[in-house]
Image 1 (tube, rainbow, N blue to C red):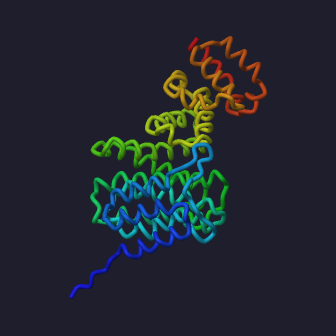
Image 2 (tube, rainbow, N blue to C red; image 1 turned 180 degrees about the horizontal axis):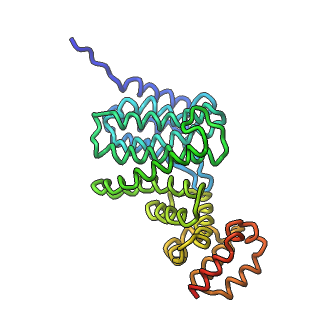
Length: 335
C-alpha cells in the first residue's frame, strides 16, 4: 500500500510559527495558509511576492521583513513554504521572490549572510537548469532573470569593497570578465522572450539591463553606461525604483550623456526621461538638470553661465573636469 505524504503539512506548521512570532503580520500569514491549503499555488506565489517586495519608497526598506542574526521571515517563507510547491508555480515569480530573499539576507552583517544570499540564487539557478518538470518556455525567462540578479549581486558586493567568502570569481578582474561574458552570451537570448507575456519580457529585460548598467558604471566607458541605462529605464517602471537609486541614476545618466563619445541626443534624457531627471530638483545636484537643459537646447551662453555659477560643484565631478572640452565641443555642434 502506498503511503500518502502531505508535503504541505510542514509548510503550514512554519506559517503557524511565523504567525506566533510576528502577530502584526498574522493576517498575511493566514492568507498564505489558506491559499496553500486550497492548492491555490499561483495565487500563493503572487501573494508572497507582494509580501517580500513591499518596500518603502524613500528608504527602500522591506516593510514586512522581520529578522535577526538567526531568523529571517522572508527566508523561512522561501525555504520552508515555497519549496514544497516550487514545481507547481511560475518559475519567474519564484525567481523574483528568491531575489528579494537574497537581498534581505545581506542586511545582516557578516560573511555568512553574504554567502547565504548568493546561495539562494545559485541553488535556484541549478534547479531551473536541471528540473525537467518545468516547461522550457517558463524556465528561460526565470534562468536569465536569476543569472542577471546573481551577477548584479556580485557587482554590488564588489562595489562596496566587501570581502566575500566562497565567491567565484575570486578577483575583481575575473568578476568583470565573468559578467562581461554573461552579458555578451545572453544578449541574443533576450530576443527569444518574444513569445512570453509583455510583463515577463519587461521584467527580464529590466534585470538584464540593470546588471549591464551596473557593469558599465564600474568599468566604463560613459557612452556604454548611457546606452544600458536608457534601456533599463525603458523596461523598468519608475515607481519600482527606490528614491536613492533614482538620484544615482539621474546623476550618472546626465554625466554619461554629457561626457560620452558619440552621445548627442540630450533630448532623450531631458524629454523621454524627464521624470527621473526631475528627482534631482531641490538636491545638491540640481545644477545638472540646468546643465542638461542648456545642453539639449544648444545654449552655449547658458552653459557658460552655469559653469561659472556652479564651478565648485562641477569641479567636484572628475568626469566633467577631465572631459570639459568634449562637453563644450558637443554643445558647439548642437548650437
